[in-house]
Image (cartoon, rainbow, N blue to C red; front, side, top):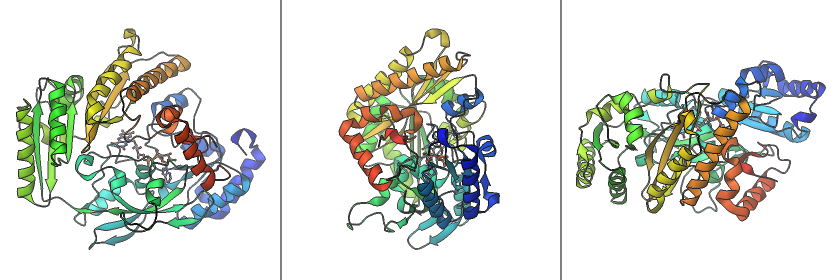
Length: 485
Ligand SMILES: Cc1cc2nc3c(=O)[nH]c(=O)nc-3n(C[C@H](O)[C@H](O)[C@H](O)COP(=O)(O)OP(=O)(O)OC[C@H]3O[C@@H](n4cnc5c(N)ncnc54)[C@H](O)[C@@H]3O)c2cc1C
């Protein structure tokens, strides 16, 4: 049953049936549910809602508090053939959490308990709806930390980070979310409860945990996660360098990564981003491409030694040492970029592409993607484009071009067409340059049309077969990830 065919009577019956599972006070009907959950945080959702075209069209919202309740909801959805869309913090920027096919929006924020802490192994089992920032504060009070700090820490849930395969500001040292997870508890699309082995490394067959990470709600509802903890670092060190040429900064980053050094943060801002974004926060008079570095660890002498080796490489590449102050300020203000006056609002059009490639392709990807974005827009719209290389790997890096059109077309369809053209041209340029369409924001509605370009026929067929096998009634997030079953 799709939204289009769900009449008032059926919707009322659905609300009543959900109420029997979670209690009527934890269910919203269609009007209440659409009013409270207007969509995720993507420009696509925000502009659609502002134009009376809300993308998230749930018929009911259920807010379970236990895994058993989630399983019962999924079994009910199978019985009634009603779509289910898991919803974490709604901070996604790709439109993934929108219940675009109607049915049940599964609000997971009530799944927010800490189940266990193992202070010997440094692991913690936490429920999926725990907000990242609150989880971090809870851990910090005990002297621990969870080194996954997305800029959306205030809104994103741990489950949402896994589902969207996210990344945090310390990823260069500690990895993306998939590197922080030992195991998951998940409700399968047919309503069974699966707990994957509680270790990240084993040879007991394939790694099911990793199949769930990045599945954006299509292959199961993640209800709890066992994550790695770390002790709060004994020391942080900072450094800032500027480079006459962006390429020299990229090469410094490459040499650092391939030599085994691991800054916790390594952010290389291109000239525009240095002058119009970084500089507004750090106020250090920076004009050329700038590299912000931070280091951390349990052993202060090692932190200093690692920082000094990285600084040496930056100097060898012609980097000018600006000292620790701008990087320190960046660290203190690392979230301000996402609040007013930095955060864009309507009537602007904005979006961030995040594209990842190996070192052999990353510079080419930078030039091709940013060129494509500029050329996609008539100069009369005053596009601004700020790009940084924010997450580094031992084999490559990613670019984060953030565009904004201060005042786009007032007509909704025209504004949407302009946004979609920039995204399409940038995505095609990324693929042509040998990059992957996304590093950590996930696919959602924005990139679903390009999944076939990314994976090809065989890749999409494989995804569809997995989906069909796990979700025979196509209940969970139908159509998402561009999967056609
Ligand atoms: C200002 C801002 C800054 C951001 N910075 C970052 C950043 O630094 N790094 C980063 O990675 N992302 C960032 N994002 C994007 C966003 O925060 C991430 O994608 C985050 O992982 C989404 O988490 P959420 O709980 O809000 O998930 P939602 O937006 O609610 O959902 C995202 C997807 O996951 C699915 N989902 C959610 N919970 C579950 C679950 N328990 N089980 C199964 N599926 C589920 C949803 O159906 C949807 O497909 C930013 C967003 C904003 C608005």
